[in-house]
Length: 141
Image (cartoon, rainbow, N blue to C red; front, side, top):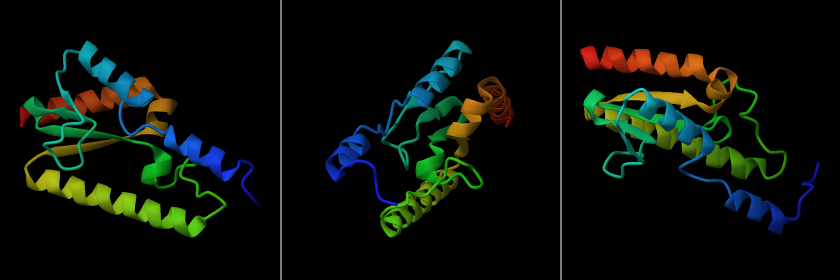
């Protein structure tokens, strides 16, 4: 099966995918801010530039897209039908880098929380309440 788009149009589409301030990141930040949490976003001082850094809780939050970060068992973690070797290499590199950055943060004494895009889409409120519970546990330690 060939791509329905020209290489130029596919390239243009891919260039529009944002690396930060995605819709899901913005709504998570709005929710946290409305609940009184104060944070930094995409802080370059920390490995992996976490999407949200909560210094008070010594917690870094990554909001991962299921496609790019390979959410195991998720229907959104598909592999494109064309250039599959390229995509598999890219996905492996993404997952490896995610793991390395998470380990670096943990070695620095930080709690790392991963929120998956599909979890937010499926049940935003439940996901955010679970995040709040985790932050409250972190505050108690």
